[in-house]
Amino acid sequence: MTLLSEAWLAPPPLGPTVIAGAGPEALMEILRPEASLALWARPLPPPLRGQAAALAARPFEAVAEGPPEAALASLSCALPLALRHDMLALSLLFCGIAGREGLRIRLEALAGDGCRFFHADAVGLRLLCTYHGAGTQWLPLPGGARAARALDPATCPAPEQAAPGTVLLMKGEGHPGHAGRGLIHRSPPAPPGAGARLLLCLDEPGRIPLP
Image 1 (cartoon, rainbow, N blue to C red):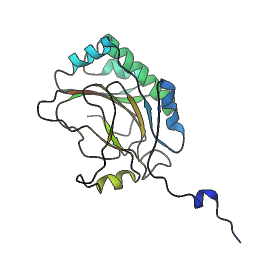
Image 2 (tube, rainbow, N blue to C red):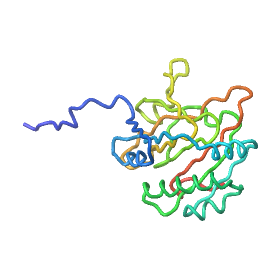
Image 3 (cartoon, helix red, strand yellow):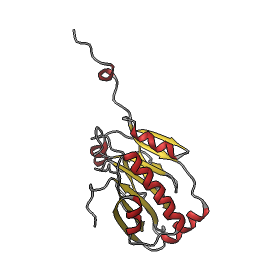
Image 4 (cartoon, rainbow, N blue to C red):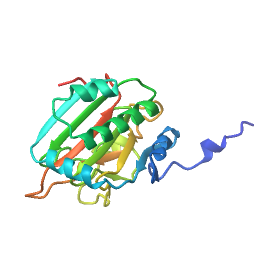
């Protein structure tokens, strides 16, 4: 008689595994096979909050790829000092966790809803940090992109939401072994008159064409 393994007998997961911590080491937890989101809850210091608010005053998008220092230097926007230092620290952390020498950096001031529909990304690893405005929302639901497409807004559960400054490191559908399990998330809906958000997005290089 063939014995079934414990993994075969175990019930399917009820939702994505989210691991949170108060320090940057929390982001390393995304390397655990079961993790879909690693979250570093951190407050932004006043100088960084002020610089981010000023930069978000006018909508823009700046995208670059390469090693962290070179990518930051080639962004088509002037970065205040505190914001540049924070973006560099997050970029180096991302590259270390992803095991890569380079990355794709996108910094944008978003006016409006952005990606307001729940979805799961097709990328491998993605880091998001909202420096100003409402943070990214996510759902503790399994099923990845397919489940996101089937969501009914009328019966959708209330999402979790990141505070400004919180760093989210998530797995997408393209991460090895994570197909069908990407984190379901979206940009927060923007009510009329809401100000712009300043969002940093870090990805592995080469997956998304540069504009």
